[in-house]
Amino acid sequence: MATKRGLASDTAMVLAAGLGKRMRPLTASQPKPMIRVAGKPLIDHALDRLAEAGVAKAVVNVHYLADAVEAHLKARKSPAVTVSDERELLLETGGGLLKAADLLPDPFFSVNSDNVWLDGPTDVFHDLSAAWNADRMDALLLLVPHTGARNFRGKGDFHMNGRGRLTRRRSGRIAPFVFAGIQLASKRLLRDAPEGPFSTNLLWDRAIEEDRLYGLAFTGEWFEVGTPQAIAPTEAALAGG
Image 1 (tube, rainbow, N blue to C red):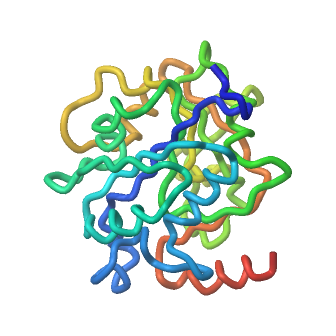
Image 2 (cartoon, rainbow, N blue to C red):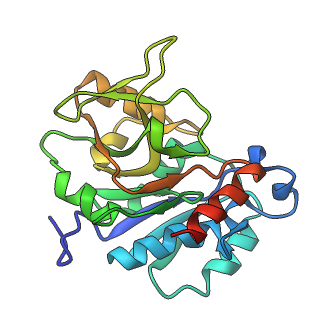
């Protein structure tokens, strides 16, 4: 059921537990979510966007240098933050969602903590909510057209048909869409999941087989900030509005 603000969910899972290996040497002494871009930590870019959209609650998982992330989160008033502790074992994206499942409603948003983006005419969380169909979808992924993915050097992730159904990038091809690190998902996606660490890709592949993985093309600007070299061009673009 939609919230009073027109959102499909009032809660987002913010994935912040990773080791940030590609961001070394900056992550030798600080967790990736705490690296500053355009004047504030990466995780605050995501949390601020959630607050602006009216998403009231965030569940943040922590593992690498978890104390630093937790200490920073204590100062936040909005969204209200609950920590999912993975100090004992890093569970990867899928395992992290599964561990936090009891803290999440159905459906829930999921956001990578290193996302930086500028919304289009509407914020991404309302865009996803407007396109959500629980009867047809296990997950609705926000996708960036490959040609507009700033700092991105990969081959892309998905093909999308006219109805929004997703399939994987074909071998030897460039896929036209890149996953933006933001999704709206049903808890049905998590059913019968394995124990321990695993990637959300495992759950997405099953959803593709069942014709229940959908995408929505993003109309704003999105920046991959995966390496130290991506910080300066991202800051320059943000400074330009």
